[in-house]
Length: 300
Image 1: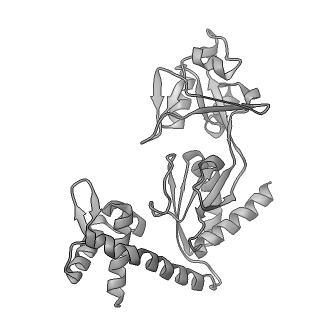
Image 2: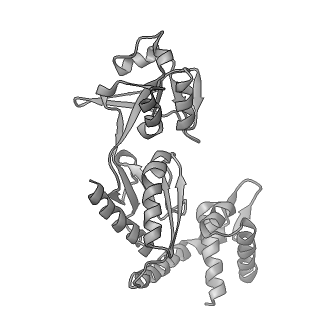
Image 3: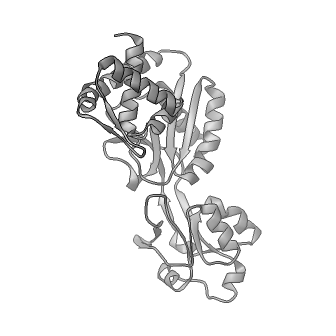
């Protein structure tokens, strides 16, 4: 098999798994037009249509399904063999894509990645902040970061940082004409700033105290999709917000916001870096895992 055909098969498999030329192109660092051109070339060489394209979607034809079934695992084995050879190099190289919730990406991973890349200049990283639960393999990621309850089954999970806490906050002006809630249930008597994830429902507010867990999704006049907007709205007196504490620390320290229900310890647990159990571990990912473990021990 020529290198050209192998490259074409890799492009076809990427488009088929993403069901999108754009998603496959982003994974491979090329343009969607080039991905389309490569797949067309493969179809011309094989003399059969592999993908059925519309303006909104991409689907496999019967021939495409028949080709993808043996090709996808074969390509994975080839990549695994290359990575195992690469592991013998003195310096890991390659491209690493990680998907993580925004607060973890911003406050935990960003400084960690900056230090990691200084140590490993031949590794290129892409860090994507996303709250929705995704299939990291289908999304073209090497690994993801999620909390214990959200980890995919049959995945290897490595703790990557301290437990993440949420803060319930409101402005002094808001609290000047309303009594502060003493229990999570009393939040239902207050206007709350709700968060909605793209393609999903509202963020659930979770509280724990003495082994008891309370979950609720309070109502309110404002719904946002960004924690910083929720903080700004709370400062302006719109209502009570529930955000990762890192977003509100500056406002809490300055007095612009007051922290509420601290004795209920709102939190979502410890973040884990995870990747498929049966998949080979790329050298770049292995280097990052080892680096994160060392940093965690030093900071712990």
